[in-house]
Length: 208
Image (cartoon, rainbow, N blue to C red; front, side):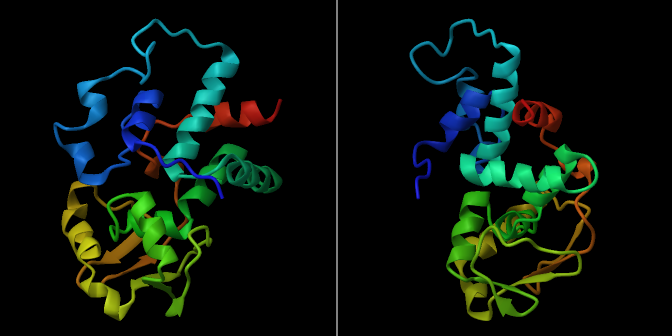
């Protein structure tokens, strides 16, 4: 399956937003968007004026890249969110937040979502004691996510847990750092998403 394999920092610069795709590097003076706060490419420093469609497209691309999804995957999430009761935009963000790879990232078991996705695929986590190696697995309220006993010695997981205090935990998870486990205690609320996301623009784009 096709997946973007280029430089992550180019994505942040393209969206003009620090999306923390590189973990520790994003908090250092090496962060590309701090050093070159303009879009990549030959004409990156030129004046850019977006149409209404362009603004909506950039918002969709930003969220899609933030969670590391392809277009077909993202559209499927939108269709499911649109079929549910409530606000489509909030339903969409809630479903994205409850992906297993994102929950592992939010609990501090990985520095980035892409790293969490790889750890999930390699079966380093257990959900309610059972092996789950599907990054898109939808976690539910009350589910316990734990690191496999042998995987507690994995250096990247231990280092991520040590550094997670800088990022903090969202209110909807409860994490036991010493036990290498966490519980989803509530559904993610809209205010828990600290990055600037205008989900209504995505709804408007797909509604056309």
